Image (cartoon, rainbow, N blue to C red; front, side, top):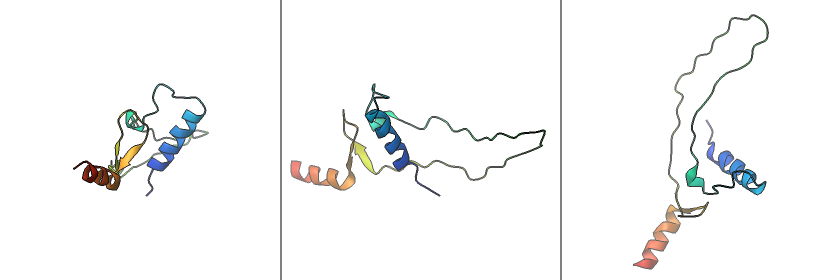
Length: 85
């Protein structure tokens, strides 16, 4: 089982660096919108696939900063709140 988020963030940052997706450079604007499973089979083969326990779990590790593409980690947010009080 692996965490896709670091790969998604890395891909977005590379796209922004190369001038793509310039309308939004805020990570909070992006979501996983779909999933396609499949493969190509040459010939007249009879094939099948079974998928079990497929899931996507969202875990909040930070709060997006308004108007920016980065986020505030939980500890940073606690420290900011303590300073404001």
